[in-house]
Image 1 (cartoon, rainbow, N blue to C red):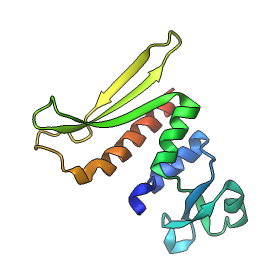
Image 2 (cartoon, rainbow, N blue to C red):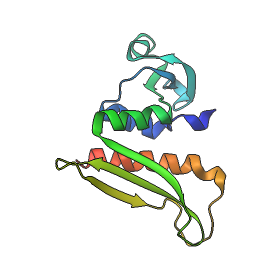
Image 3 (cartoon, rainbow, N blue to C red):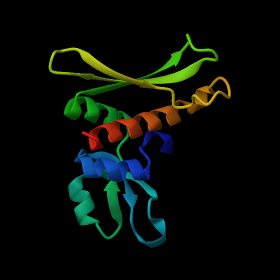
Length: 140
């Protein structure tokens, strides 16, 4: 189930960007458990109540994609690009600009010339996409 949550570094970056939604998890900050995912329903209030133990919210990836759509008008999709040989996962990030046209960024998180991508790497592509969305907002 851990693959459904953003990683610890992403959670910290999202916190800096203002992500403050109720979550099913939080990352611990207590001694040797730093960065350990603790799955329980959490809000900012929970974190304050248990600040000695819990460090930052751990949102689900789906929550993060929704937050980027709602708060920053950024839409992300991950597709198999069947026009590229060998087939590869492609990430497309779109944003509606002031003239109601989409500004698009595309990248291939695994475009290293080695070969086709295994289907089990989809979650890694989601993570790469979240990293790119965070980068876009930080560089605004």
